[in-house]
Amino acid sequence: MASLNHPATEQEIALADEAATEALGEKIARELKAGDFIALDGELGAGKTCFVRGLARGLGIDSHTVASPTYITMQAYSGGRLPLIHIDVWRMKDSNELETIGWDELLTDQSGVIVVEWAQKITDALPQKRIQIQISFSNSKDNSTMSSSQDSRTATIIDQRVLPA
Image (tube, rainbow, N blue to C red; front, side, top):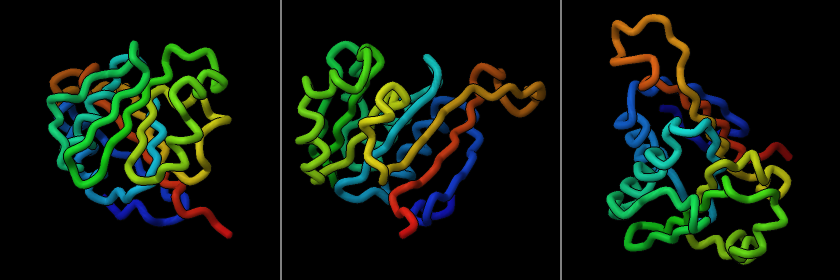
């Protein structure tokens, strides 16, 4: 995978299964710096939380502790190279509800990495400088190299951390 630090680079990566999705998260985590923000989208079951488990592992955090924070909204993980804040906004009606988790303080802190699942629900509140990741099920008709088309996914990554002047 090419470095993510180019202005508005877009990459599309085929993911054969959940293990590949986690491996991608782990690989991206190695390039992350304090203050980085990941806006993560994808349909239900596409592998968003698998990706976050990989991020945790790549940051040196025990990935076995990572679970979807759908009902608690936010989970903080520490013990690695950088802290990881994992937020799931699926149950939120809109970005006005972000105040309940201290959104402004989280964005100001800049000491760790923030990843938000279902980020399209709060587009108006997302920082401009971010990594945008969409995980989608592949619609491949050729299953000869994949266990099933349901397992195969595609990750589209747009790195917007360096914006043109």
